[in-house]
Length: 331
Image (cartoon, rainbow, N blue to C red; front, top):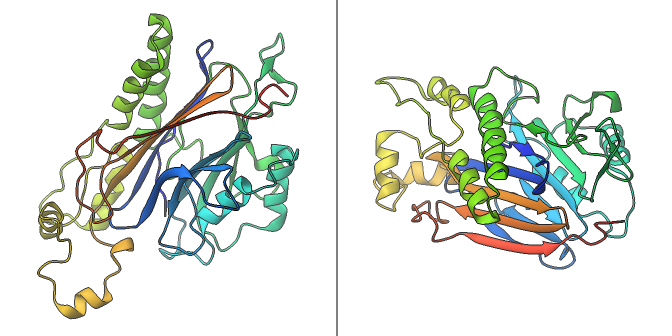
């Protein structure tokens, strides 16, 4: 369902957390832009997938500092639509009682004990944003657990990976299991994010300049052109090479997209059997960056590149900023 490249970094001085994400999807899959959710979940900020009844999200954060980000990957013999929504797994964490003090380690154990079958391949990055303090050996202390990665492959709590338990870490996660360095976009995203943040800190840049550096990473397009007669499945395997994925599909699909009529010219029977939310032109639909400073101030930035009709939006004209301070940051 969701496809993201997520370098997650801790800046040694300016920032605490800095997730960057892409939503790469079929461009006509309906989504809500990032916003505060309606009652009874008004504590949650994030976009929503409107195609499935669960209205799951790929990236969300709460006023209390719970952060969750989802990536998917295809396991063998997996259908395009799983029995359970991956986005609903994210929702279950974000919808926890705002007053809950349950630790991320306990949540991870609960997810595994509940069972993660029937969802398909996925990695869930989550944790509770709090002001960390560090021991002399550089490890986190106090109530900061770091960020956990639980996947459908997690059989027990020992399989959970913990990130950002030391200052200055940078990690990348994409549509494969965490730690798979065979994907060029993972290696490049991690290195580029690390370099961009280090350079920004060295220059003493403000938040806006840092944001531009990070957006340049999300715009990094190294996808090869599709060869003549190259099959769709073969070509889509090339997406592991590029952080940004431009709108791709067959030539007629691309032309219809640019004309604003993705199904124009198709026969009635094709129109009746085509679900545009899971077919058609595919590419980077949204870009998101979440900045958190040492005082617990959050800036959730989202850039939408295509509207609900899959028409391109001029870059920057649909940008959103949401700012708030994490409740209980110093607790």
